[in-house]
Length: 466
Image 1: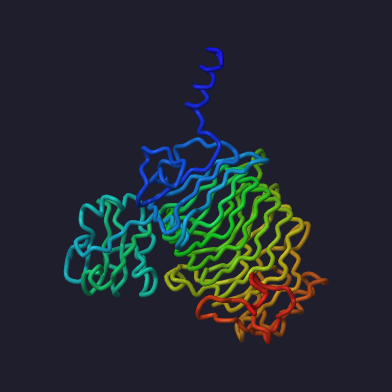
Image 2: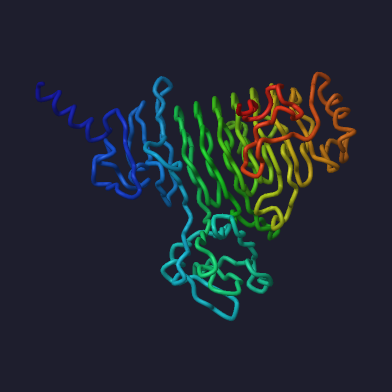
């Protein structure tokens, strides 16, 4: 090699990592190692975030590991996507950007029955605490209040901006009563802003006060085989009229997104929507374009909305959105429902969609049980209404559809369900009835052989085990 080529080679090596696999181990890793084998893994997501990868590289997190950081997704190429996945045995690698307050020494009693954080923990709550999860949800969750004088019941808490801390009403030191106490901060699990040609396969995200996966302008992006839970609820902003806004979605595509696939994920306990693409374009030069997005074979329960969609203003574009073979159960039954200012659980929530919308299809899904409605429609879609094909719906004696459209405004029960959809779309062919699941108590939502809808290719796991 001549001197010029050698110099070029050295320069390129200093800017880019070589093509291959990179390993991350939260227990035995070391960011000073090369990360190129399970024997020399990195330790932190921070190291991953600051590294420039080549198209085709794989970033592999060790199963059973835990990272209290946010993952910033990078990009590959159309021919060679960048892959984030796992290696080893055990539970899926867990991205959990919360703060643990599980040691009794983490708490001190500020006044009788009111507990606050020790200084060494409080200094880590530099952003809003949107939820407190006790015993990983097996016990209960905190109830967020806005003023100290509103702390009336055990489990209610207030986040203090200055100094950073919380006030929690509790009968004793919470870390003595519970083995685990997690403070869910206003953070993302993973951010896909401007990411393209990337695959996330088999990661778990929980206790993120913003979104599990979120960001704008993602392209050729796949999220599969992931688990997302206890997401959302942090204070995002306060409106001019003094209203405090909280939100948080499991997987969100904000503003423009294209050629994205979300498949085979399990999502539960979400403040807002488990799955959503939504947008609000800033101006005509930057319309929100949501195109070619597929959600399939996902299982969702205990989210306020199983699926949410809206896009505006009218120069924005939505086209080729497919929602198929998903199982959506118990909308509105999550941890946040009762404390929301607007409890309105729905499997499909469509707000004021005025974007130019074409080829939006829901087919072969199960929509079972909701606190309020199965489907909520706010506005007439133009030029095309969404298409419903071979979905199974059931909500007992409760409302099936709430329509805000002026010509059909009202709450529609099961008897009026098919009439409405036939008027909405004459070619729809829907199913109603109570599905029988293999073992709902264990979240096994495959249909049994004697269930309504069995054999009609519906739901995330439509084939029952032999």
